[in-house]
Length: 182
Ligand SMILES: C[S@@+](CC[C@H](N)C(=O)[O-])C[C@H]1O[C@@H](n2cnc3c(N)ncnc32)[C@H](O)[C@@H]1O
Image (cartoon, rainbow, N blue to C red; front, side, top):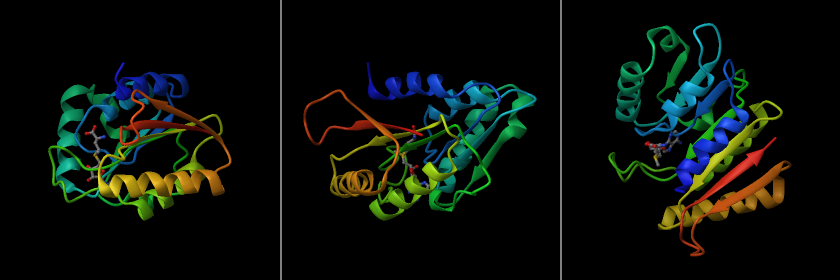
């Protein structure tokens, strides 16, 4: 099973109709559609999507509006800004990070070690108890390797929750999934 499908399976173990969720690196792919289907109802739930690339936000908005019932669309909030600036009043059950760069976007725009660690620490603070952070890490390129190192340091020095790591390759540059439980 691909790691991304593993992540989607894990989402179902913590996120239920009426919950709030955050996609901290919304990009243009499938994660947010999975999140929306799990947590949004016409009456409750909310989905908060962050990306510093406006094109990613525009693409995601179009995709969601074409795929979801109209009555849940007002429950989706878009933030064309860094995930470091996540509002403290959101109380999500699940926050997802898919690190690195968007393959179909500008490869020079990627997540960075410093901002990622700050955003992960803030995310864990605002997360509901019983919730989780899902983090796809790509150590196969220079910035990704530094980012993975910074996350490891943060986990071993400051993190106070449960950590589960999923890998589908023994190679140390292969992507892996962190599932952090509060
Ligand atoms: C690997 S892509 C996400 C892929 C996406 N999950 C998908 O399935 O299409 C990483 C995304 O993070 C965004 N990004 C980079 N730094 C960011 C930051 N500080 N805050 C929010 N988004 C950021 C990039 O613009 C890019 O779209």
